[in-house]
Amino acid sequence: MSKRFLFFVVFVTAFGFLYAQKESKADRLYYEYAYSQAAEAYEKERAKSGLTLEQELHLADAYFRTGRYDKSSAVFMEVYKKDSLMTNAQFNTMLQSLSKTSGPDRAKAFLNTRSDQVSEALMINADFNYETLEDLGLTIGEYTIFQPNINSPQSDFAPSFYGEERILFTSGRPSDLKEMYDPSGESYLSIFSVSITATNAAVRPGPLTWVPRIPYHQATPFYSEALNEVFYVQSNMDAEVLAFDNNGKNTLAIFRSDESGSFQPLFRDLSTSFYYPYYQETTGRLYFAADFGNGYGGTDLYYVSSNNGQIMSQPINLGPHINTPGNEIAPFVFDGSLYFSSDVFYGLGGMDIYKSEVQGGDSFSIPVNLGPGINSNKDDFGFIVRKEQGGGYYGYFASNRPGGLGKDDIYGFRSEEKPGLKTLAFRGTVRDTDGFAIEKAFVRLFDGDSLRLKETYTDRDGNFLLEIPWRDSVRVEVGKERYESLNLGNTTGGKTLETGEPLMLTLTSLESIVLKQANRTLLKVDAFHFERNSKSLTPEITASLDEAALQLKKFPELRLRLEAHTDSR
Image (cartoon, rainbow, N blue to C red):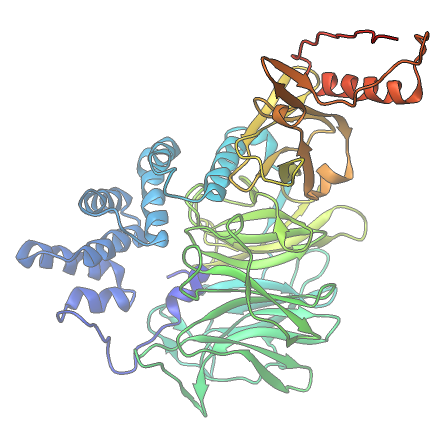
């Protein structure tokens, strides 16, 4: 079983699986990750006495995990017809199975029938990625993919830069210290270090001596050059034995270790596993993946603020544009972009690598699939990248695509351009002159004067988000019936659009500039008087006329009638 879902293989039972309902051989097999045998056992139990809805969902998932997507989608749809209540992660797997059996169009059609039940962010993400993947010219990079000679017949994954010429990685290759881990059929995971030359040749990998070796899992390292420390995950232990929660589950904790071998736990919970720590040196943020049970799907991405790696805040979820009904893992920030992996249903298959622009600290642009080349119809994850000294970019990722040596293998890549589609993000809030949010105002992007690129409407809080593949020049229109139309004109590489910095836009309503009086509607401008025996425009008169002209520009559909009279003088 692939280690791409490290979170699926780290749970072990202390005294057998504890199940609250009837004793079930199929359930035990399912929770021991023996999915093929579990599917067979579930079918026998279904024929004999029937299955609960939860067991039906387990059967559908077991079929999916073993590549029998037609059976998986059939069972999922049977359950959905009986009871549409399923977890976000199960909903994601159902759409994945539909995509694999009938193509993305069926998954899109099914998603559209549920558009009122899923988040707006998920619909925006899905639409954008379906659109860009259909136009592959937008997403395909000129990548040179190669295999460094560090892979083994076992799983090798989670590469991390370790100085200029070395990388760290995780492997299930045999170890004298570690026993076999039954769910994977490989050794308990270890962290290795290896030197890679300019020709991609590697010396023999060896265990990372910084990390005190234990007989259980140690995995997904990240080396911080600023702290000269390694962040990683390892199995929870009491003394020298595995520690289990009340349900017989062993989980992974995040540790840090320095060159002397001194180590310290950072996150430890006997019922929650943590994965793929990444320390951002410029901000002091420690990113990681976890399933706290209250996120958007399976594992979500979080960060905590830290002081030189010491935790200083509660975990902050990266939000619904990054986290989906699927599983998100392996965060990596480079040059203002967040790279991560997700098995969300609108990808190319399994885990895919995405890129999102970091905007204003806690905001992120729509994550965009890196497209074929880096991604495949298998699992691609654990992406890292840096600049070449002579220009261009290079990095590494893991994949279980055909042609490798083991279940997961580490691949290298080179490219002339920064990996990932560059986008133009436009977001903000629309309010009226009294500061109240305007709902359902249109926001339109144009290329030039007439070609409409995209349109959206503000939500109940007046917020909007529009994102398109990068263009050097766009025109933006914002408005609503009985409100002014705001034309922001052409913006060429403007800071606001390029960085996604939120805009606060104000629209004047028609009601706010007119006054109803008897059977007349008057424009709210200050009354003015000419001097006696004069037709000259005084500054006061000019100010009133300028105000009237301004409102005519805002509301060109207005038709005014000017009235004046002389008094008895």
